[in-house]
Length: 68
View 1: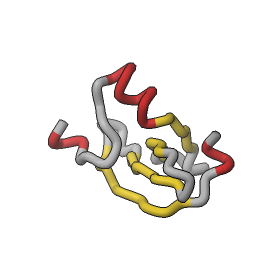
View 2: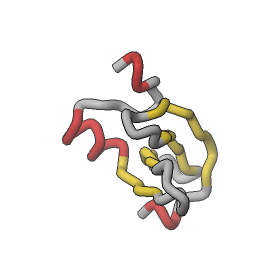
View 3: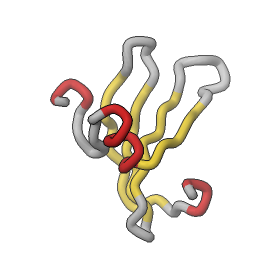
View 4: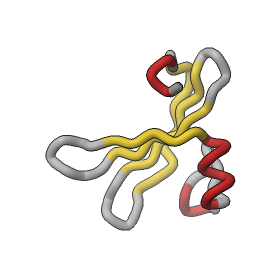
């Protein structure tokens, strides 16, 4: 689970159409996640495992959104 992640590497993937920021995070245990941070007052965030991201959208973590 993402709450058990100690970050080892972060990669800024880019901004979405609503100015939400997308980051890829690799944990010290090897797990990888995409983190979405919305451009709202609270900075609302969501986390998705990279394998799930690729399965449901075809997008890959640690690649720029503009190059996918």
